[in-house]
Image (tube, rainbow, N blue to C red):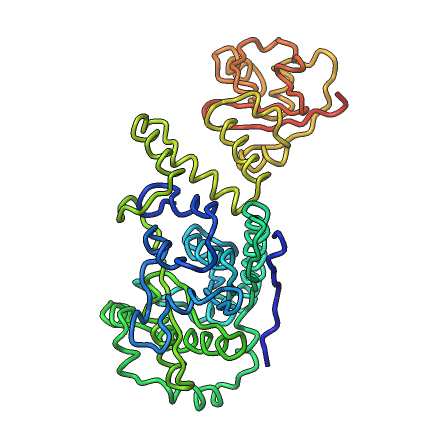
Amino acid sequence: MAAPTLRCFSRGRWFRTPGPPGVLLLGLRESHSGAQGLLAVQKARGLFKEFFPERGTKIELPELFDRGTANFPQTIYCGFDPTADSLHVGHLLALLGLFHFQRAGHNVIALVGGATARLGDPSGRTKEREALEPERVRSNARALRQGLEAMVANHEQLFANGRTWGSFTVLDNSAWYQKQHLVDFLAAVGGQFRMGTLLSRQSVQTRLKSPEGMSLAEFLYQVLQAYDFYYLFQHYGCRVQLGGSDQLGNILSGYEFIHKLTGEDVFGITVPLITSTTGAKLGKSAEIDHIMQLHDKEPEKRGPQKRLAAEVTKLVHGQEGLNSAKRCTQALYHSSTDALEVMSDQELKELFKEASFSELVLDPGTSVLDTCRKANAIPDGPRGYQMITEGGVSINHRQVTNPESVLVVGQHILKNGLSLLKIGKRNFYIIKWLQL
């Protein structure tokens, strides 16, 4: 039985990475000439790292994509285990890869690992993940689906180009594993895998040589990932798995499993793992060339980094999310009163998470001293008064030294009816004024 589709987005109109900042993300804005050359272009740009198998198949991978998208759309999937309740920057390159395929007219699947997350993928890890309770995994899976759906919607809004796109489907592998009986599964699937081959995987070898060793649950992870690939091949015609470069061994297990059972060829594509400050130089589009030329002239302005941050934020959180992030940046790092004036009280709460929040009525003649005391920001008595006179208090990024100064709307109280009170270097208080 086909797994239920949690949500399918059809085309309609719908961190640092290795190399120059922004080259991969900004490349989303470039138009595709159908599927022709998609693999070669993204390999040259550095988004795709390895193809498997490269040769020796009946239809080789480039031919699979270059023989006409309209008549032969392919299906590509990538897995995302809900080990946390949100996407993180490490998922970005894989998602960009899926988006490129979708924009070229192919169908893509984001597979949430509601079942496999309970085992834990040992790839790239030096020790076993902490076991998650079933309800925690289900909650994380729901949140992960919401995050994926939000990015799909943002991608549609930001990059629609008038061409026919493929579909974007979100599935959860718990849909088929929860119906499996252990003994039946092992009898049907386990006999297709050879222990020597599984033990030879680099992720397994690394863990077996570690002091902690490797649990049976982790060891079987590659078997379940291989079965996921087989299930999607059988029910969705999926012939390509996309994953991080640390997933090559798991992808290979899936290839061998499917080829053994069906005689058909499937393929794997890896994307680079996001690293810190090192990595190979990637290709650049003309737009990115311009950004990098400006960076070479004035590196202290960090133009490419800011552009990359803006593009990632917009893709993940949408245009309003980017606007909010810019307001928060100006308010927090540039002490901008203008930014504070257009922020909502919710944005201020999120920006200054440790800040106390108060709602106060503005009585006639309310002074700086009155405000500080009503907000419980300073101690009673002479000490609180002295803190103001000594310059330890600021309102809306402006230092106040006269405790008796009466609050002025537009100076101490912003147009949005808020005041940001700062005591010392790190203590913030948000005040929302009522009855203005």
